[in-house]
Length: 369
Image (spheres, rainbow, N blue to C red):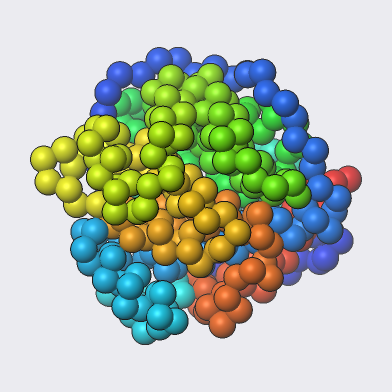
């Protein structure tokens, strides 16, 4: 199903994470709806989001799971001086993105399959990707859920249960945040796509936060950081309190430079995975979402700064750069991304920027009909 990008016409067209207690997912919340852009603006935002995620993912994939000192050297010696692409992942040439973007792509393709949002269509695509052995760097939660889907488990029951709370459903959800103008529909879709692989409500809350962050970032108005955090925290907190609380708490340290911000995150106990020895930010949903938001808010109008900050913390660098890069890309559009690097993104030589752009434009056209 995913081995070759379909022809799309322009108009028709290491992650073992357990932590803490959970409570039930709530599907609704009181939030102001966001006015969706006109078709051309939506296509630009959606293309920027998908390409921004793919590039951030590819850049972060080079040092995925490496400690903070290695990630910082990579940022300082290669990314910031304009030497991106000189290093690559040990198993892939530079430009390969991981399952973070593969599954964001499949999420958008499922909208085409089902002529709109349908969690069953997404579950089929996810299952097929794993059955064909096409996934790149997937975590144990998503992998186990894919196996259950392939065995016939219903999509709503296939997710890896709590207390596993990895970031696998937050890493892929960003582009979905632009498809719905209505906040309730966005929340429902974000939660349903999360349940396909992750049953812990913290994962659903993280997915809601990222989807809404993308929607807010794509607004034309100037970004009010305090209002942005308040709204995202409220919506996430309506699903699971600890996620909303962690996002709201970011207001106290969002002004700090990255080195101090990482120490604050660690001191606050937001990442218990590395409580004894700091190894960067783990794949636990709360710290990875919070750091991605911090990276975006620190410099929301500079894509390159956003992804460098996301990667520099070390740990789950591909996911944090994918999330933060997708939010920034939705705000800034594809023209803000470095063309020479965007042209190198791919999935084993397929699904390059041109095909991802066609997909984003097709979904944008569908979403405004």
